[in-house]
View 1 (cartoon, rainbow, N blue to C red):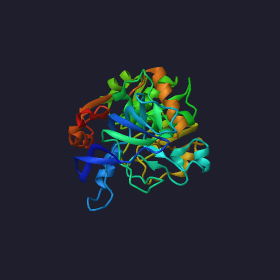
View 2 (view 1 turned 135 degrees about the vertical axis):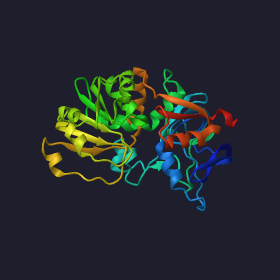
View 3 (view 1 turned 90 degrees about the vertical axis):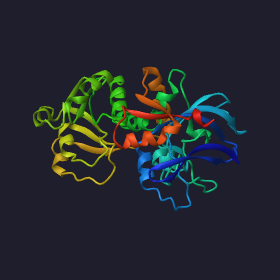
View 4 (view 1 turned 180 degrees about the vertical axis):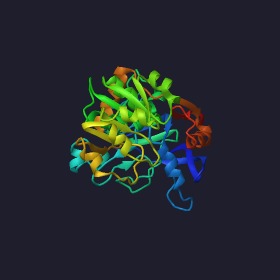
Length: 346
């Protein structure tokens, strides 16, 4: 076994620095020195539900960048010293219709998650990127383009590909009209990507407080969702509405923004929702969702971001301040993504 250092949960609010074991390299594995790891709302959810009495340890972190420090004998796509990125999926069955279509994120047998998942070969629990080293199957690591800052690129591997997937699958292109509801970790990347795809892009926010931020990100306008007059004026306007709001909320106002034959894609809140059929019927509107991305989409997203200079707006903290980052994230006190610098684990 390989040993490394990481941050493991002791209870639903605290992580402690511990020694971790990684598997010896399999023929198709690479070992990655984790340099930067993003802090995702999913990490908060995992911690909140963590039972310290369970036998399975919890080490969060599923969006990270680093450098290859070891390769298995069958690895040909990577060499020691290569810059790489790893996201929230590290394996899949590879045989179902979804995997064969390049949508490993929808694997019928369920993909192996970067942490809290079950390794498909030995049944062990996967431990995440809040650590100095990660061992991953080479097919689920991605070359990190040289033009991307490794700290600011880390959130692309979760938040970035999560918004990229619907933007691409819904055909956003020059001339498209896109609205992004919520301007946080997901939303700010959705704005950047939609603008780079050539769409006329509008932010929908509860107040006007983020108007300047929206403009800096490239948005063409901001609509205040609490202003009934503004919302009424924008009715039936957008081909695609990307909803990144993480709390439960009424979808009806956002469906009304969708143009005829357009789509509302909900990404932030994945719990149960109630929809009036007539809100879909009037205008033949569609309601969809998405989550993460397959290998092809993830690689495409990274190339697109490199070509257009897109990275996340991040605040980088030493990994020793992980509890601070999580506490501030709980209070939405971040613009727009925390990233942990893992070098202090040396």
